[in-house]
Amino acid sequence: MQSVYKPAYEYGGPGRFAFSEQAYQDVEALTDFHMHRNKITDEWKNFVVGKSEVLLEKSPPNLIKIDWLRRVFPGSQFVIMTRDPRAVAAATLKWSKSSLPELMMHWGAAHSQALKAFRERDCTIVRYEDLIKDSNYELERTAHFLGLEARKRCSALEERHIELVNTNEKYIKAHAGARYGSGIWNHFGYDLSS
Image 1: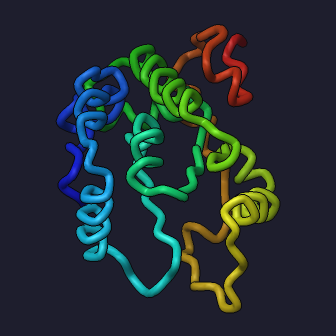
Image 2 (image 1 turned 180 degrees about the vertical axis):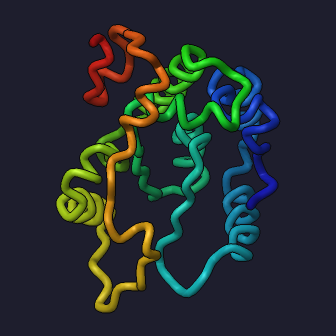
Protein backbone atom coordinates (compact mmCIF):
# COMPACT_ATOMS: atom_id res chain seq x y z
CA MET A 1 0.00 0.00 0.00
CA GLN A 2 3.00 2.31 0.33
CA SER A 3 6.66 2.39 -0.69
CA VAL A 4 8.29 4.38 2.12
CA TYR A 5 9.14 1.47 4.40
CA LYS A 6 9.68 -2.15 3.42
CA PRO A 7 6.94 -4.75 3.89
CA ALA A 8 7.22 -7.31 6.68
CA TYR A 9 8.14 -10.12 4.28
CA GLU A 10 11.50 -8.36 3.77
CA TYR A 11 12.18 -9.10 7.45
CA GLY A 12 10.96 -12.70 7.57
CA GLY A 13 7.22 -12.09 7.26
CA PRO A 14 4.49 -13.08 9.73
CA GLY A 15 5.87 -14.41 12.97
CA ARG A 16 9.39 -13.11 12.31
CA PHE A 17 9.40 -9.36 11.56
CA ALA A 18 9.71 -8.30 15.23
CA PHE A 19 12.91 -10.36 15.57
CA SER A 20 14.65 -8.43 12.79
CA GLU A 21 17.10 -5.80 14.02
CA GLN A 22 17.26 -4.58 10.41
CA ALA A 23 13.52 -3.78 10.50
CA TYR A 24 14.10 -1.37 13.40
CA GLN A 25 17.21 0.15 11.84
CA ASP A 26 15.59 0.66 8.45
CA VAL A 27 12.55 2.50 9.77
CA GLU A 28 14.62 4.65 12.15
CA ALA A 29 16.80 5.70 9.20
CA LEU A 30 13.73 7.26 7.56
CA THR A 31 14.01 10.72 9.10
CA ASP A 32 12.42 13.08 6.56
CA PHE A 33 9.11 12.78 8.37
CA HIS A 34 7.27 15.45 6.39
CA MET A 35 8.25 13.92 3.06
CA HIS A 36 7.39 10.40 4.27
CA ARG A 37 3.98 11.55 5.52
CA ASN A 38 3.19 13.15 2.16
CA LYS A 39 4.34 10.13 0.19
CA ILE A 40 2.48 7.59 2.32
CA THR A 41 -0.70 9.69 2.34
CA ASP A 42 -0.51 10.10 -1.43
CA GLU A 43 -0.01 6.37 -1.98
CA TRP A 44 -2.81 5.45 0.43
CA LYS A 45 -5.28 7.54 -1.63
CA ASN A 46 -5.50 4.63 -4.05
CA PHE A 47 -7.09 2.52 -1.30
CA VAL A 48 -9.42 5.05 0.33
CA VAL A 49 -13.13 4.49 -0.25
CA GLY A 50 -15.52 7.34 0.49
CA LYS A 51 -14.75 10.49 2.44
CA SER A 52 -13.69 10.74 6.03
CA GLU A 53 -11.53 12.86 8.27
CA VAL A 54 -10.11 9.61 9.67
CA LEU A 55 -7.86 7.08 8.02
CA LEU A 56 -7.28 3.66 9.57
CA GLU A 57 -4.24 1.56 8.75
CA LYS A 58 -4.22 -1.89 10.31
CA SER A 59 -1.07 -3.93 9.94
CA PRO A 60 0.51 -6.09 12.65
CA PRO A 61 4.04 -4.81 11.80
CA ASN A 62 2.93 -1.38 13.05
CA LEU A 63 3.34 -2.78 16.56
CA ILE A 64 7.09 -2.16 16.17
CA LYS A 65 6.73 1.23 14.42
CA ILE A 66 4.58 3.25 16.83
CA ASP A 67 7.31 5.74 17.79
CA TRP A 68 8.23 6.30 14.13
CA LEU A 69 4.59 6.59 13.00
CA ARG A 70 4.04 9.13 15.78
CA ARG A 71 6.77 11.32 14.24
CA VAL A 72 5.52 10.85 10.67
CA PHE A 73 1.86 11.48 11.58
CA PRO A 74 1.80 13.97 14.48
CA GLY A 75 -1.49 13.77 16.35
CA SER A 76 -2.13 10.20 15.25
CA GLN A 77 -3.62 7.71 17.67
CA PHE A 78 -2.90 4.03 18.13
CA VAL A 79 -5.30 1.23 18.95
CA ILE A 80 -3.22 -1.76 20.01
CA MET A 81 -5.33 -4.84 19.36
CA THR A 82 -4.36 -7.90 21.32
CA ARG A 83 -5.56 -11.48 21.28
CA ASP A 84 -4.55 -14.49 23.30
CA PRO A 85 -1.04 -15.15 21.98
CA ARG A 86 -1.76 -18.88 21.72
CA ALA A 87 -4.60 -18.15 19.29
CA VAL A 88 -2.45 -15.70 17.32
CA ALA A 89 0.45 -18.16 17.15
CA ALA A 90 -1.71 -21.05 15.93
CA ALA A 91 -3.53 -18.87 13.40
CA THR A 92 -0.19 -17.54 12.08
CA LEU A 93 1.20 -21.04 11.46
CA LYS A 94 -0.38 -21.12 7.99
CA TRP A 95 1.66 -18.06 6.90
CA SER A 96 4.87 -18.74 8.76
CA LYS A 97 7.61 -21.36 8.75
CA SER A 98 7.96 -20.93 12.50
CA SER A 99 7.00 -23.28 15.32
CA LEU A 100 4.33 -22.49 17.91
CA PRO A 101 6.94 -21.64 20.59
CA GLU A 102 8.73 -19.31 18.14
CA LEU A 103 5.43 -17.64 17.26
CA MET A 104 4.71 -17.17 20.96
CA MET A 105 8.09 -15.49 21.38
CA HIS A 106 7.37 -13.31 18.36
CA TRP A 107 4.03 -12.19 19.87
CA GLY A 108 5.99 -11.24 22.97
CA ALA A 109 8.66 -9.36 21.00
CA ALA A 110 6.15 -7.37 18.93
CA HIS A 111 3.91 -6.52 21.88
CA SER A 112 6.93 -5.59 24.04
CA GLN A 113 7.82 -2.98 21.42
CA ALA A 114 4.23 -1.68 21.38
CA LEU A 115 4.20 -1.47 25.17
CA LYS A 116 7.53 0.35 25.17
CA ALA A 117 6.04 2.97 22.82
CA PHE A 118 2.70 3.16 24.68
CA ARG A 119 1.64 6.63 25.83
CA GLU A 120 -1.77 7.14 27.43
CA ARG A 121 -2.30 10.36 25.49
CA ASP A 122 -2.35 8.61 22.11
CA CYS A 123 -2.57 4.85 22.71
CA THR A 124 -5.28 2.50 23.88
CA ILE A 125 -5.48 -1.27 24.11
CA VAL A 126 -8.42 -3.33 22.88
CA ARG A 127 -8.43 -7.03 23.65
CA TYR A 128 -10.16 -9.28 21.12
CA GLU A 129 -11.75 -11.24 23.96
CA ASP A 130 -13.27 -8.08 25.48
CA LEU A 131 -14.49 -6.91 22.09
CA ILE A 132 -16.30 -10.19 21.55
CA LYS A 133 -17.70 -10.30 25.10
CA ASP A 134 -19.07 -6.72 25.13
CA SER A 135 -18.64 -5.20 21.68
CA ASN A 136 -20.89 -2.19 22.35
CA TYR A 137 -18.86 -1.13 25.38
CA GLU A 138 -15.48 -1.69 23.69
CA LEU A 139 -16.53 0.13 20.52
CA GLU A 140 -17.92 3.06 22.52
CA ARG A 141 -14.80 3.21 24.69
CA THR A 142 -12.53 3.15 21.65
CA ALA A 143 -14.62 5.71 19.76
CA HIS A 144 -14.50 8.01 22.79
CA PHE A 145 -10.72 7.66 22.99
CA LEU A 146 -10.44 8.49 19.27
CA GLY A 147 -12.91 11.37 19.49
CA LEU A 148 -15.28 9.73 17.03
CA GLU A 149 -19.05 10.00 16.99
CA ALA A 150 -21.42 7.32 15.77
CA ARG A 151 -22.53 7.69 12.18
CA LYS A 152 -26.11 8.72 11.63
CA ARG A 153 -26.47 5.87 9.17
CA CYS A 154 -24.47 2.68 9.57
CA SER A 155 -23.06 0.74 6.68
CA ALA A 156 -24.42 -2.74 6.06
CA LEU A 157 -22.40 -5.51 7.65
CA GLU A 158 -21.33 -8.65 5.88
CA GLU A 159 -23.22 -11.67 7.18
CA ARG A 160 -20.07 -13.12 8.78
CA HIS A 161 -19.66 -9.99 10.96
CA ILE A 162 -23.18 -9.75 12.33
CA GLU A 163 -22.58 -12.15 15.20
CA LEU A 164 -19.20 -11.92 16.88
CA VAL A 165 -17.89 -15.26 18.13
CA ASN A 166 -14.73 -15.96 20.10
CA THR A 167 -12.80 -18.55 18.07
CA ASN A 168 -9.76 -18.73 20.36
CA GLU A 169 -10.43 -22.22 21.67
CA LYS A 170 -9.90 -23.98 18.34
CA TYR A 171 -6.48 -22.33 18.04
CA ILE A 172 -5.50 -22.85 21.67
CA LYS A 173 -6.07 -26.61 21.24
CA ALA A 174 -3.16 -26.67 18.78
CA HIS A 175 -0.81 -26.04 21.73
CA ALA A 176 -1.79 -29.39 23.27
CA GLY A 177 -1.79 -28.00 26.80
CA ALA A 178 1.65 -26.36 26.61
CA ARG A 179 2.32 -23.91 29.43
CA TYR A 180 4.21 -20.75 28.60
CA GLY A 181 4.51 -19.25 32.08
CA SER A 182 4.87 -15.55 32.72
CA GLY A 183 5.61 -13.12 29.94
CA ILE A 184 4.60 -9.81 28.39
CA TRP A 185 1.18 -11.37 27.81
CA ASN A 186 0.46 -11.04 31.55
CA HIS A 187 0.52 -7.26 31.16
CA PHE A 188 -2.29 -7.59 28.61
CA GLY A 189 -4.34 -9.85 30.88
CA TYR A 190 -3.42 -13.28 29.50
CA ASP A 191 -2.50 -15.98 32.03
CA LEU A 192 -0.74 -18.77 30.16
CA SER A 193 0.58 -20.63 33.20
CA SER A 194 -2.19 -23.25 33.23
